[in-house]
Length: 223
Ligand SMILES: [Fe+2]
Ligand SMILES: [Fe+2]
Image (cartoon, rainbow, N blue to C red; front, top):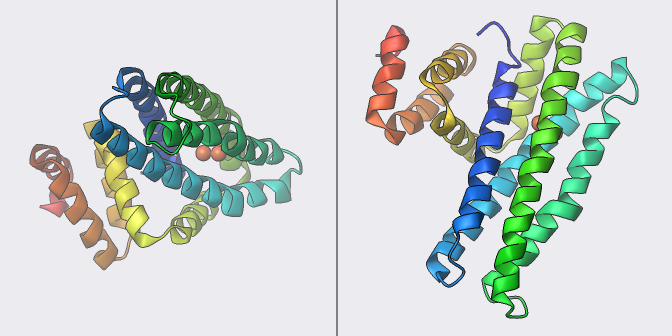
């Protein structure tokens, strides 16, 4: 992969798959199935952590780098991140609290609110990521050369905790096509220390044997 920020695009792709899936799950959720609600609540909480970690990497690496070249471009993206917290994630948390028994007991309204907030999450994220992909990313790739971009990707990865990074790569992999898996694994194989790659490839191989066999077929040096 000659485009270091492709990894950034893959993260965005996985977030978009996930928010579409969350909307569907919220629509189908049985408000009387407490096990399903607990499982969904835990998944939403985990996903919120993943998104927050992605946003932190943008706010500490990409946005300041962009700001140094062109003041004011990055501030709109910072603004979106803060806005999600107050207007979307807070709404989801409140609806979940209602459904898990910590609210006022209006379960039908809480279930409807959870669905509504999930639609909002999907649409807010779609627009935000479309702007990052279509407006911000081309500017980054014009302003910074390949080695600077690779440094940025490394700096963003170094900010995350290793366990969450491993989970995040596994989560992206699950949403990817075979071609995208090949590109991501090739990139990780080339750029990670051998020990870190061994840990991540073990996680990926354990997700689905057929998918991993296809990755190995495409990248013979892994076999
Ligand atoms: Fe962002
Ligand atoms: Fe992003």
